[in-house]
Length: 232
Image 1 (cartoon, rainbow, N blue to C red):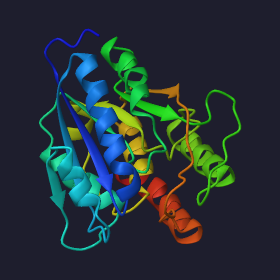
Image 2: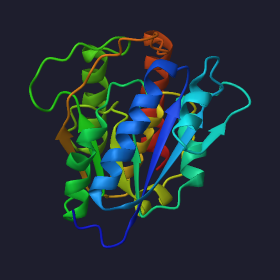
Image 3: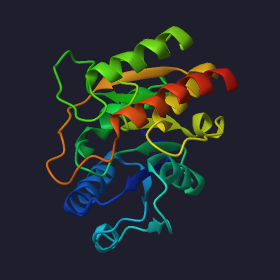
Image 4: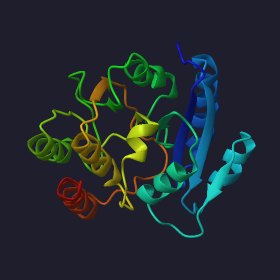
């Protein structure tokens, strides 16, 4: 992979993912070493009540600990404030994203085809079972985003992403919870950056429970889409 000496920063938000986060970080380190990028892994623990922090520290990765539970969006924003990379990636810590697929997201950016690459669970045409914010909710958010920014996306809520530092620096993010993915997408499009999706596999969590509230988080996501559009 042609990296031109660039630094890749990977931000991993964590909340009560003791059974999975160690495996995710270990596999991620292996993949990053194979890409040829210089890299840093930035883990932000959102005040987990289990042993997530100890598991991450055993992987010899720095972890920033929030003093109270603030939400995924806030944790990502803390991570974004720490990054030093030319390229920034985000990946969930519950094991639903495969670290081995990170090069699939990196390739379009490296080839100069995109500024933000989203790993889509749905663009390969397969039926994916999702809990919480289900496919119907995703279709609603995708349709609204497409109307507003005139850019067709199949998985606007995916947390598996790669972007340039320029994209990240162009945004003033406000979201505190799961609506951050929509806010980032809309603001990126409104700045006329190029957005591309690549198909990824998706493994529904088998440990713990999702923290998503379908009703309340759905309302927040809808609000964030409209707000990001109007304020961009």
